[in-house]
Image 1 (cartoon, one colour):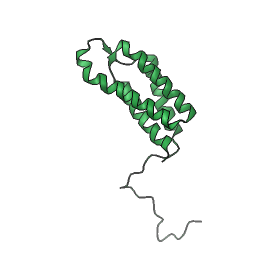
Image 2 (cartoon, one colour):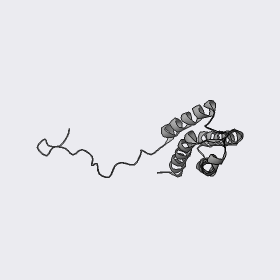
Image 3 (cartoon, helix red, strand yellow):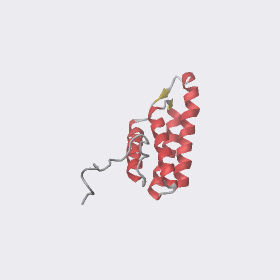
Amino acid sequence: MTGLDVALREASTALALLRDARLPATRWGRVEAVVTRLEEAMRDSDADAVLGAARNLEDHCSHWRARRAAEPESTGPPPVLEERVNRLIHDERAASTSPPPSDPDVSPPQPDPGQGAPL
């Protein structure tokens, strides 16, 4: 797994958190700017910038998650941002250069010993 793959997976996790986040309306503009930086970093295949943007998104989500009960004006992401987030999650899966980790409890199919070697 490459450094970019690790960064893309972290970005996917941060984006999934973002879909469920409830922030004050005034915070969504800042989050949108981070999403724009993430898009640019993904387009440039810049692992460090992807990771930095992902961590910034996680910070936005976790910081406000703890305070959201005290913020009566908290809302979910605006529809346009939500669509961008969904597209980025899809793009991350398509851009990953490594297959997802396999299940260690599932072994690859074995040839039937009575059938001989495949042609």
